Length: 353
Image (cartoon, rainbow, N blue to C red):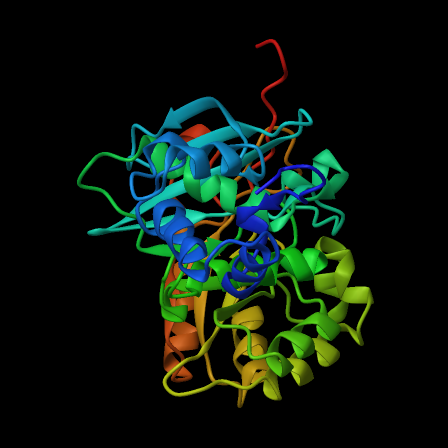
């Protein structure tokens, strides 16, 4: 094959059928596409020279046309509290993002970013303070997966992916969904949809689209308020899409299949939304949505304007929900000592540090 005018293939932006079509258009036999997918996604090999079932000539041709994940690991921080690890990555254009590895009992979850910064403006979140720079491509989202593979111990394996890092996943809908399909495709990373969760602050039209397109993932909603006034003060997105009622209507009509439930995430902010009265309102709002509730005590960050709730208020809030027959768990975010907990990601290490 001559490489003149051959369009490059960015492997982590393509689904299997698109990879196969590219190989077909270049005159390669179909099985070569599956060999490439096997090396990159199932064996985690990114050095084309090591693709041992391909000839040197073919490897040379592919080296000029296949674009593999591109990133630089700038810094790795490890929590002294719980072994959470935060990885700062630099992309080819100089943009910096963070991804986090979170140990939960015998499992490891990876928290993925979908944007450089965020434009949702949630006042409790450090990422919002960055402003918005740009969306990440599917390949850049997947670059975080490969970067973590680079640093895991031999006995470690990521068991779950959570789209809860920098940025609002549904604001970058197409690239986020493409990344999810690559993670869950059996010819690519091959994870079950049961091990992928997308968390959104509540873009109502995109939630409806996610359900209509049957995207293979769990849905988690950052609710954080029980009235429009309360929620709009900390989450400006609430002013769009019909407010709190519009969001709840979308959740009631969202297709929840089998034993799945929507996860309601509720950050408890001291003196803002953490009273027992708030808990009672939350219980009433969520009926009859099939859901479970994660209560997340607020994690202050440098420059934060809010404070963490007291342990007593957290327990009292949980007690009200349990008495109303909800599954309500207190989720202690990992890595608070390295600013890796919920709401603390900011990609803030300056160049040259």
